[in-house]
Amino acid sequence: MKLIPSVVTLILTGALVACGNNTDTPSNDEQTNNQGSSQGAAIPASELLVAQRLVAQRADPFIHRTPEGHYYFIATAPEFDRIELRSADSLAGLKNAEAKVIWRKHATGAMGANIWAPELHFFDNTWYIYVAAADAEKPWLIRMYVLANESPDPMIGEWKELGRVKTARDSFSLDATSFEHKGQRYLVWAQKDPEEKLNSALYIATLISPTQVGEIETEISRPELDWEIQGYKVNEGAAVIERNGKIFISYSGSATDHRYAMGLLWADADSNLLDAASWHKLPNPVFASNPDLKRYGPGHNSFTLGDDGQTDIMVYHARDYLELQGTPLTDPNRHTYIRRLNWTSDGFPDFGQDKPD
Image 1 (cartoon, one colour):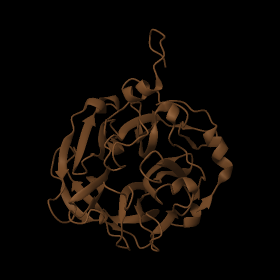
Image 2 (image 1 turned 120 degrees about the vertical axis):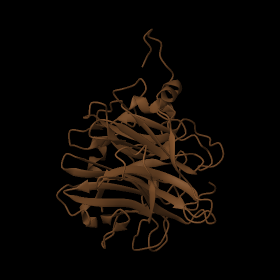
Image 3 (image 1 turned 180 degrees about the horizontal axis):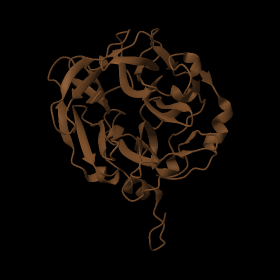
């Protein structure tokens, strides 16, 4: 993985445009527990941000859009005890969609605590949920698990537990995401490094089955930059988007308070994605806290498409105040927001750091 400072200015000083639909479109290991109105009057930034929340108190948000344009929303519930799904025919419709609990944590043993960052994927004619979970008796024994549902609609049918995702090392791991490229399905996830000097680094491997990665597991990023090691040494929350001949992976770093921020990796679409040398990394965050916009600790994003099926949308969580109500894990007010993702003339994502949603 190579640091590339030359494109930082292009991304951070490019045209920063807010999300087009403004009406309703609005983890770290060892952490302590858990524009104007129609009348011309300006709306304070704090009120604007709150008004544009998509879903309150939902962190690590992930939105799946079907080819037919239907949306499913999944995220971390603040009680860390269940998995919910919401369904709507538009992004704005997710705001008031009913949350259906499709799975609850176990009373004892595996998958009994810290139910974090579920993601909904569809491949091989099956719906899959990748989720992190801990043992009820050992809340930091966190691993990645998979649930499956063969129903055409993930809101109905039976969700079956397929077990743990099997990787070469048995250690703290979470935030699995999956994507397909040139007919090959991959898994990207966060895991404690072999030397156990970091909280988590990012890895990629092919996916042989929903629960089994291939023999080659490649580290593509580790938290070494100053902005990635504030409070905790973390790379986590990977999200994949392929555009302009490149595979881009956004990710999050540092503790899950106001220091939480997002970085960017990329590889050429024709490169060997299992070769660490194929991956490049920006030295500065691409999306971070902005007190002027009452945006604190944005991160753990995902990508989807707008209602037109063409506009790229970033989904992320953030708080709208600085001082935590408790700890980063016990404060429940990480809310889901969405914004339009623009692109620079060089074909890189422009996250709009200085613009409201």
